[in-house]
Length: 180
Image (tube, rainbow, N blue to C red):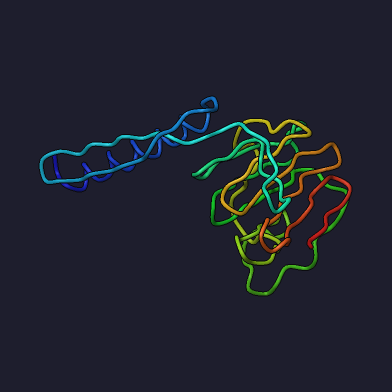
C-alpha cells in the first residue's frame, strides 16, 4: 500500500475511534497512539472519562465529568452545543433572543453564533464557518464537565463555562449572554 494511502487510512482510523469513543460511557481509561512505518500502520485508541464531583482544598469545584481529549456535549434542550478540551471550550447557540456585537472586519465567516474561552485567556465571540451544535451527549442540568482548568456547568438558566484559575468565562442562554 502506498505511503499516502497508509497515512490516510491511519488518520481515518484515529478520527473514527475518537468519534466512537465520544459516544461511549464513563469510567474508561485509554490512550491514543499512532505509529506509521514503511510496512505497517497500527492505531490504538481510547479515552479517559471519570464521573466524580468534589471540592479541592482551595475551595474550587471539580467537574462531575472530567475528559482528557476533545469532547462534545449538548444542553438538554439541544439549543447549545459545546466542545471542550484542555486548551479551550467553545459553545454555540442555535436560537437566541439577543444579537451579538458587530463582527470585526477581519471576520469573513459567521460571527456571534458562539463564544470560545481559551485556557488562561479571555472569552470572545467565535468567527467560524462550522458549528459546535449537536456534537455530543447531553450534559444534564445541574451537572458539569471539565478538562484541565476549564469547566462548564449546565443549568436551566444556560451554560456557564469558566477557567478555574483565572475566573474568566461566559454564560450563554437563549435570553442573554455574559462574558466575564
